[in-house]
Image (cartoon, rainbow, N blue to C red; front, side):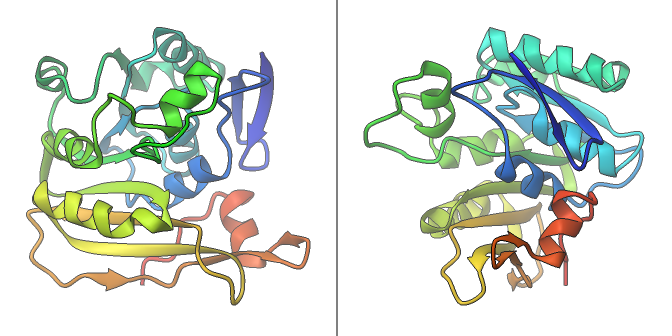
Length: 242
């Protein structure tokens, strides 16, 4: 087990030295959630807790509910909540996000988010926990993830997903099928002029407004982070929303 630091040390994160490790996607997802102080949020598939901890570092007094199907990772997320001094505001539930019984245990929520398994098929990596995080396998598909995360949202609550750019159309359809419209797309470009590899999509429960393409973020300038990416990855800034 290793202790890593995110957001320039604001977040302390215990995670395995090899295999499933949180990084860039976790910080970017947390930066794109439009939460306000005192609200209640839900993370599906929280792993070691990197996303909700980064969000709590930016937005004070949040109440977090997180779901994780792997008992070892659920225990690690609880341990990381203690390490960061927020355990009194974090509830980690063990189970499958698609389980109706588990969803009934949740209150009404303002925001939900996930970094769901990337790929519906193909050859998964050999390490079991990493395979479960990246390959859907026999688990829920994107439409099921979206329905489960949207179910406890209040009207106008937001649902955010970070995924490979190749899956943005499927993810947008899943959000709309879960009655989360006003889909906003944020692309992440490795460098200026290069195709985006990751995107963040956000919909609003029962929203009626138009879809939006948001400014996005260029991650690198030369060999260093861009100034805008550094503000997010080190300074805990939120992603631009207009």
